Length: 219
Image 1 (cartoon, one colour):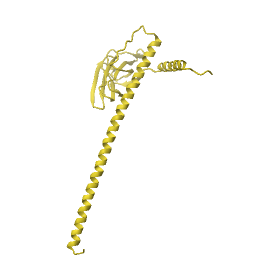
Image 2: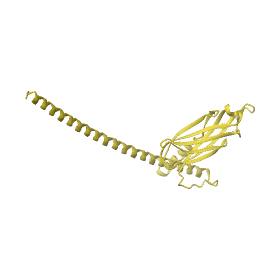
Image 3: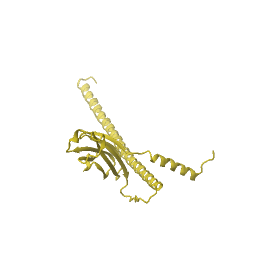
Image 4: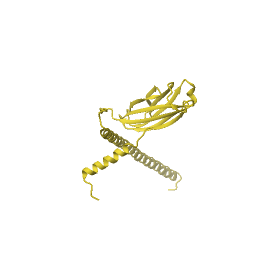
């Protein structure tokens, strides 16, 4: 077998990535009545999240999943690190939402179904997908892009996501290092304080015993 040169190797790796990119699909889940379903995402700082959803309910008359116009989807996002709700939206049974994380940390993304019709007690199937992007970068998703160019563009966006995640990991490592150094410093000062207190107690005991023995004329 001939050895691959740098150009062929790059094309081979790109082909593998393009094949793998076709595997990703949106997930779906079920909601019982007005049940709320939450997803935990660890987001880097200043990351735009674009979510798309489609809610369907099973119709006994049609024997299939259909879109109920009376159904509403309530979306909320909470920053668990700061304990703040950063986004909320009440939309139709099909739509999208966007928000940008202000700080790095865990975010809870929740979806709940609500309806004023008799469909309230039925099961709802929600097809859900999320995409992550950098709001500072302007993208042109023109329909004139070829299929290959579009896939390469998506791969570039994924590389940017990985870089943002690595940057977030470095920030968390720096915070952990600072916290560890602060803890170690406190332990050292606490140890020194204990030694000083023990030394003072020993000196007091020795002086007390000396005065006691002198008073008893034992020494």
